[in-house]
Length: 221
Image (cartoon, rainbow, N blue to C red; front, side, top):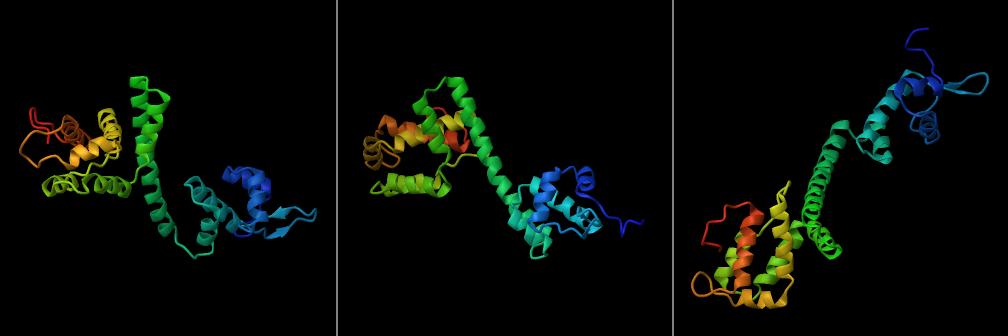
């Protein structure tokens, strides 16, 4: 019997694809892979096209593609390239989240952090760029224009793979910005001349650390 007309039972498909029999049966019941016919005993039989479809389904599912999207690819409503592009972007987001989680765990392990600090770090690492910028706008509302401009220009954003020092600085920045007393002191701080509150000086040093800038000794703003 040649390859064009060869038929496979579910068990044979399982051996060839590495999928479990119950998984293939599920895809068959859902209409993702349709049997060509049934044997005299009533068992489902599949052709070469079904084998190829199953291989594609397995690959897409292993890449995290949901079943409705898989159906659209099989029905030629979407190309594999289009699906790959979307999921590549999603994987980038997942990688960034995992890197941040790793940095948090390293910081906790190194510091012996308590539950409250762990919760704070978790909240901070979930901040989106937009949320971070909104916090900055709250901080500079009513501040000296020169200071406000400096803050907006240096809006800190964590790198994709932050060091323990950067993450610790990010956590401390969140604590500072959440302190109303600090915000009052910050808004009243002079631009580049005159005495500056120690907390404001600390803010600028933390901004440098989060951004990965080299901190110049004796100059922290």
